[in-house]
Length: 213
Image (cartoon, rainbow, N blue to C red):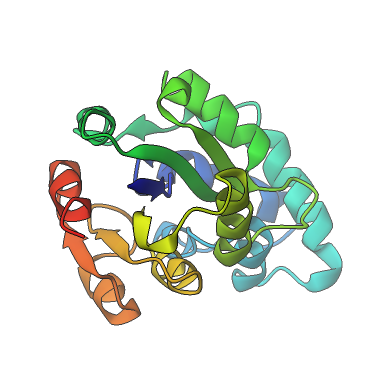
């Protein structure tokens, strides 16, 4: 089985770094920074969509993305922490014979930086991430790139694990079921409504759920 994993809100808690970088980008544009709950609720989609949802006009999106990345690539990537039990989950999945790959809307550069920072890079056969040039940013596009890097595996041999409706619906577009990670940013109800095939309330739940298919 191939297990495709989202990262933010699934493997690590990157809320602090993302929120601070959003605030930095909005401040750079001279915009009012919303209360923290509004910033946290925006986490999940590709960066441009995230900034647009927070009111950044189309004409200023490129500048906002640049300001966000300027802080994120040097500071924000390190303002994060692995969720308890994630390393054991990855080791169990690998020990059960599953192939692991990332499928994140985070850019390729910060994705690799964070995987190396946490010592997780060797655990993944493929690092699937959004392109830094914006040619592939949505979860559907990222999954398409990831599956291509995996030599287009049989979709019946794949599972997605993610914490937002973007993960569930992006996987569904490729005929792949998703385990919803309820410890992340979306929560059980969002994942259930989106159509998650199963819900995991702790990383330790994931290996048994993907092994049922």
